[in-house]
Image (cartoon, rainbow over all chains, first blue to last red; front, side, top):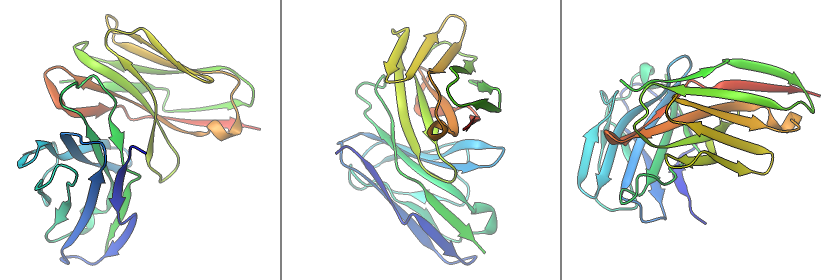
Length: 114
Length: 113
């Protein structure tokens, strides 16, 4: 089954404690991206990757890092989380070869930073 | 700047009604438009994808249309059921930047039994 898998689904952490949210897709997609969803602000892009070892900033990259060492994985790293990073996070993937195709999203990670 | 707008922000209808959700976008140079469903605090479920060359797509009780020239899409839900209650989001992928999927703010739909 084609899917994007995020872990963990829920996470409560304290300010300043480094954390990583993992994202993995099984569709051999070149494109992967992270979004955060906040009430009143909708979904905003954090970082994206067009292929292995190619990453770039989205609209709200501050406080986040990403890496793309393998095609299937695109972890989101919060080196020093702060309460304003409390949000619902989504990972997405799709093919670059034909951007006209469907984007797939993970089930989301609810992060709370206290 | 590409903007995606969904009106109304919230809608409540009795069970059994047919209804239409609206989505408008400012830049017609898009690859596709995708409709998603989101249950409270949950993930995004893809409902329908309309490619830029298509006019509509159907899946069960759902029908989505696309009019690129006017920058509009509609999601038609037939014979609504309480289980259809959710937030519906539309999103576009544009030519100038295929790296970003741009979402509307969603329509929160409530179906009254």
